[in-house]
Image (cartoon, rainbow, N blue to C red):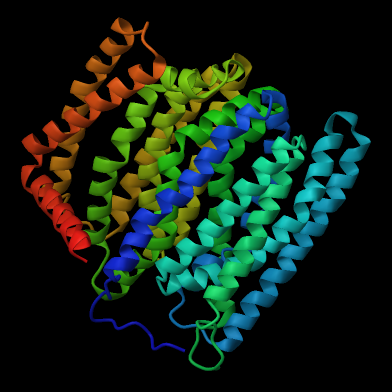
Length: 493
């Protein structure tokens, strides 16, 4: 078993590992994204909604099955063989119990004709829940040790398995069952690869580890936060599926997938890199500087692409989706901005988790859920686009609340010049890009939609560069020099 981390300093991630943490995941997310883009060509909106609804339910239950032991494993001071076996045994029992309950519910739904297919799909996904649950702790053992290359291998193998099996099954005409087969293949690949790559990290000696009762209590708090977070993320889809119908859910989920590409990347970076790194900062030197650097990065590099996606949603959807799916554009316009707000919310919550403030994380999750539920109750009678607007409003309020709580609870004594400059860049960029983007949409609507979307993206990039050079020149030039130096070393090597 490795020695506990030194309290004197934060061990930096090796450059190669850091590149895998920050840059390799876009390729994983890209495979997922391209697969989701291809699915509308194989499904009607009704069929796709039928397939998505049971997936939303099972993924929520999977958070409960994990019981927060993934993040508890990362935050534990030390893990020995006894603690490892206790965590595995407890998690296996919870997973099997939830899967059995899922089968019972699926069988009961056979008595309701309108929900019979949902029940069958839930039964079909029950084994996937057990398999994926078994893969969790080996994967997060890699997270704990910041083995980012191995994590990339696990993620890539799992998502490629999902893509190949899902698209093959969809092309063969299996309909909603295509996603059942795809997610099962994803779970099997993740289990095999994570077990293989973490085999040298599994502890074999006893003594010195955190007490199981303490770790379980931490996991319980984190489990509540995870379930609240997931329900707060996807209760909109569940409500739409049951209230507005499966076809509406198909449109909404497709818009959600397109809007959340960078959010998915941010979620992975937060879980796999930012959380263990900020936790190391807490143990060594305090969280303030690391959190502010991460917040600045999110403002500069995550918020603007979401805004561009919202602006260019109509020509983009017309260019990549078949005609029955063009109604997705009106939803992406608002869901992309909601995803930008969620990125900032996610960052604040990750910092609070790393600081060990689980109670604050639970309260924020509860608030986020209540805000979304209230928004949905008001918006659902008025249709899909009003629901998307309501999601944007609730996400924005929740993000503002999380940022305020994080600023008060973390050791952030000042906002810092660099953070203020990032805010100036964002404001100046928005002031330039917004009017120019709307002008392009109005004046060049007769062009091919792909050209219109590309024109908006081009304007946004140049406006961002100009804003950086005006308000954040030193940092922008330093980043450019660093990138150029790395490229030169790559060519030389």
